[in-house]
Image (cartoon, rainbow, N blue to C red; front, side, top):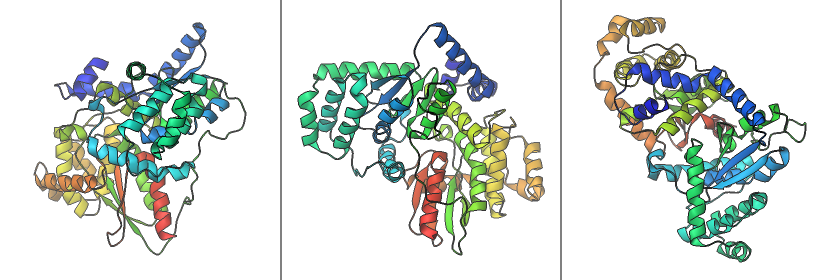
Length: 447
C-alpha cells in the first residue's frame, strides 16, 4: 500500500481506486486508534520507557520556536527525551524552495510574539555560524541539550558570534563528528517517516513543532505520565482577538483553496464560521492542486499530510470520512463551472460543497449528474450554468489566483490574504494552522 501511494505521489500511473484506498487508509480514525493501541501494547510488552524523539535543525526558524519549550516539556512529563540533530531536508520535500525559505522566516516572525519568544531575524544565519552551532550541539548529551540548544539558537539567529565562540570553548566537536551526527540524525528522521526539523515522534506518530505539540501532550497525559495534574499546556498562544468582532468597517479576506487538499477541506467550514464571526468580505480564489501543477510529493510527506489533516479535522469537528480524490478530469470539470457560479455570488458555497463531497461523502465531483444536483441546490439554473462545463476560461482565472498567492510567498493551500477594503496593505498567511492569526490581524486593523 505504501509503495503504491508513493508511486502515485510521484505522478506515476495509478488507478483512482488504489489512490483513494491509500488516502482513506491514512485518514482513517479507526486505523489511527488501532495503531495507537497496538504501539502501546508492544511498548509495554518490550518493557520500553516512554521515549520521545525531537528532531532539531539549527537553521530552521521553527526549531528556534520549539527549542524554547523543550525544558518545560521535559519537566512536565515523565518520559525519556531523545534529541536528534538533523541537517538538510530531502530536496523533494521542499516545494518552491526560494519561497519556502522566505515564508518560513516571515511566518515565525509573525507568530513568535504570541508564544512569548523573541525572533526578529531578517536573514538566515551564515554557513559559518551554522557550522559553529552544529559543533556545539553535536558534543552535548541528551540531558543538557534543551538548555544549551536554546542558548545556541538565540545566539545563532541574533548573529552573536561571540556567544557561540564562548560556548565552543566548553562544547567542541570535529567536522567529521558533526557530519556523522547529522547523517545519523537524518536517517533516524527518515526512518520515522518525517522530512523536516522541529518535530516530535512518539510511538508511530509525528507532531510538528509548537503547532502540534498539544497532541503529544494529550496522548502522554492519557498514558498517565504527566508530572502534574493541572491542565496548563507546555506552550500556549497569547491571543487578544475576541471570539466575535463587530465593526462598521470590514476587511477583505482572500481565500485560496484547491479541490484536492485535505487541509483545505479542514479549513473550509471554519472560513464560513469566520465569515459569521468577523466583519469580512470573503473573496474565494481557487487554485490548481499541487499535483496538477506538475509538483511531486514524496510518499512519506503525502502520508503525513493526509494523516495530520485528518487529525486536525477531528479536532475541529470536520472529520474526513470517505475520500474520493478529484485529481485530473473531475477537478477540471468542477473548476470549469466556478467562474460563472462565482459571478452569481455562490463561489465559496460551491467550493465548500465540492470539498465535502470529496473528503466526507466519497463522491466523484466530476460526475455531471452530481454537478447538476449541486448547482440546483445552490438555487442556480443548471441549463445556464452547464454551458460553461468543460470550457477553458477557468484556467486563466486560476492561474491569476496562483500568481496572486505566490506574491505573498505562499505556494501551498489553503492560503489567505487580508487587505483593507480598498485592497491596500496585504497580509498573507499559509495554512489552516494560521486561522487564529487571521483573527489577530483583523482585530488589530478594526479594533
